[in-house]
Amino acid sequence: MVETLLLVGIVASLFVGFNIGGSSTGITWGPSVGAGIVTKTTAAAIMTVFVFLGGITVGQEVMGTLSEDIITVDLTLSAGVAVLFFIGLGILVANIFGVPVPTSMTTVGAIAGLGLATGTLNYEMIAEIISWWVVTPIIGFWIGGIIGRYIYPWVNRRVDIKNSPGPLLSLDRQGTVPKPALGPNTTTQELATTVVVLIIGCYMAFSAGASNVPNAAAPLVGGDDGLEMTYAVLLATAAIGLGGFTIARRTMDSVGGELSDIPLLAALFVMVTASTITTTLSYMGIPISLVMSTVMTIVGIGWGRATRPVTFREAVTRDSDAQDREIELGAIVAEEQEGERAPAIGEEESEEVLNAADLFNPRAVIKYISMWIIGPSMSTLLAYGFFTLFPGIA
Image 1 (cartoon, rainbow, N blue to C red):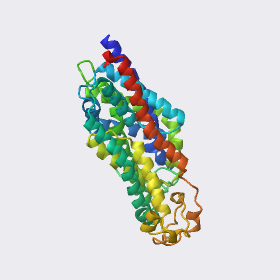
Image 2: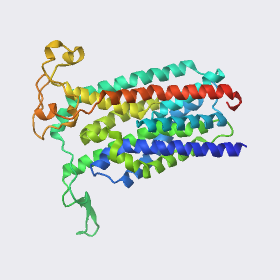
Image 3: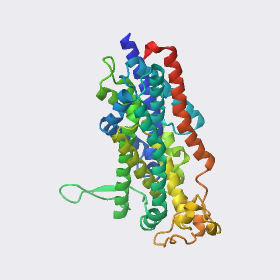
Image 4: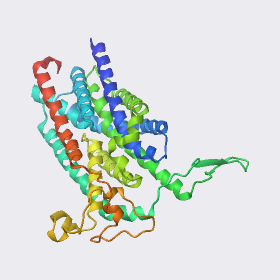
């Protein structure tokens, strides 16, 4: 009986990890693939390696929270399998609505529902987690806002990320020992920016592993009948990697529509900010959604970039004296030409910036935030009802 239950749990874990790999690989490597810096196969391979590193290191802190701290008793194998079912259901619902699934939040909701039904919920821990869910979007937005107003325009004029035709590197065979050399069309700046892009992609993959591996692995860790943590991490990594090599090939083309519409440089700022927030909270043992940090950083950079024609005080207070200066939320998609001076804070932007397409459809932002509320709420209610009807499974 135990072996059968464990087998069902492994299948459920593979399903969850597979879908996580499809979405997180697209978010992590979509901009780099779109810019022609890496191929989809290479991106999936690098993603798998760094997801494992993130899961086996920082991810263990999150796994401890999910399997031991949210409820006051250890998460049993039977309860873990049921939790994986609700996570999979949450992924399905999010896919139907066409938004990135808040997997970490859905996982916490399912375990919290178990705790409510059995009277074992650790209210202090769940309050701490929810408080971070409220604070994190605000942090991402304001960091993005500062980058958009003061940093991105300055860097954008000085850094030009290009992908020249031909190989990036070649082998110089003129000497006794072949040595690596720049490709026929490769410049030193192109090589440097490519290396930076790859490093940032690896960093975000590490962050994705730290936050997402526990969602597929933690429910199977615990008790005498569950998997050892290392085996659970390997299982989740394999599933995420499989998703990266298969269904992520499509998501890397579109990246859900968010990062694909902004310049690669802006996407790199988003990736670094979102990864740092997510990795830091994961190290603290807080289950957090990488998508949450990513989306709100995008919104923040767009807001900061768009409000440069007004002062900070005017932007925050909506001073009536600033109403005659047009603010366009699509400004992030416009790039100054290399060497062109960015207008100072309070000056009018160029026509190219003011006429940029509107990236942040308020309805789309509301849809994302709604899923951050609906996802964990639904998994909590479903888990509560299930474990109330079948308390013996817990």
